[in-house]
Image (cartoon, rainbow, N blue to C red; front, side, top):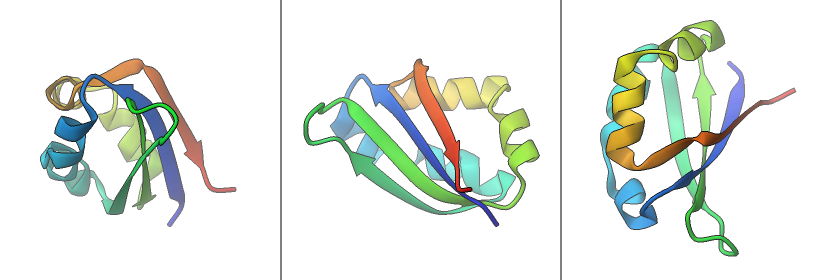
Length: 87
């Protein structure tokens, strides 16, 4: 199961950290062990590290309205998103 790192900017870091939405939408597509990170130099830059059972399923989900709605709810700025897969 690959480990994936996702970095992006958010509108409000405290809101993003407190939100249960990412877990609610990612776990059903096979994402587990979600850990959150913040950039001490750039307060609105955040990241996730997670285990992904099926990358194709996750990437397909990321193109859905449900994913867009979840990101909007969490204040994610999708144009800043970078996804890295453990190699």
